[in-house]
Image (cartoon, rainbow, N blue to C red; front, side, top):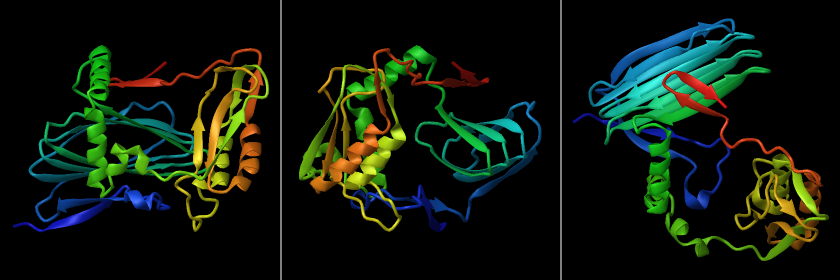
Amino acid sequence: MAEKKQMILNRLPAPTWNWLRVNRTVLDWENENEIDLGAVVRSVQGKENEPLRLEIRGEGEYSRKDVDVTAEPDSAVTIIETFGAEQNLLVRTHLTARRNATIRLVQIQNTQEGSRLVSTVEGECEEGGRIELYQVLAGKGDMPPCRKLAESVIADGSAFEKCCQMFAAQGGDISVLKDASKFQKAKYSCELTAPADGYIYKNDVEKIGNASVLLGAGRIKKEDSIDFAAGITMHKKLGDFVKAGDSICTFYADDESLFAAAEEMYRGGLIIRAEKPTVPPLIYARVTADGVERF
């Protein structure tokens, strides 16, 4: 019987949420009889490049494909990887974006029911370099039936059950997902209210994140601990109309003295005006077999 080795996936650079045990995924993988599908190594120059299309199909019970693409300075390239597998396929993609280069990676999954696809993506960017990642589950139809499918699995609870399976596969405690009362509760809360009537014209997400850190929900240094009861509940979002005194969000912390600094940080990124802002779209592009369609 072939020996199976363990692969460590999704390892976080700075571990968090230890009590849920989701800092990494451990996967059994058979290396002895693994079929090497070869490697694709490319170096791209210039901006007027045809998309690099890679049809990657698994062979045998276990197979592996390696992809390594470098975009040289001031270049741009789109890579379209289409995956097909009936059993176990491992694809390792490494991307390097040199100075002011852009790499757009589109991954289309068209694998068989019951198969297992493991796709790892690593990237390195020099100054001004950019890597964009789009992942698509193909073979389910066009937009209307796909939207209906997504809505139905949310409504019937099967999407949530799949989420629970993903947590369980990583050793997580799914009981807290099914019973929110098991989450830690903060000792104190504080409402941040609107200072005037108007529309939320700006709500700086970086300052919101920093405010959350000041409450104890994040780290300033890697060695800092996290207070899992701390955080922010949002009640209003960009473009919403508010009246003076309306609650915009609620702060939570175990130390009341943290609220003042967190509120100052949050309000530093909050602008309310009489005119309604232009709200950016939730979806910027759609990935098809022909490439990326930007809206």
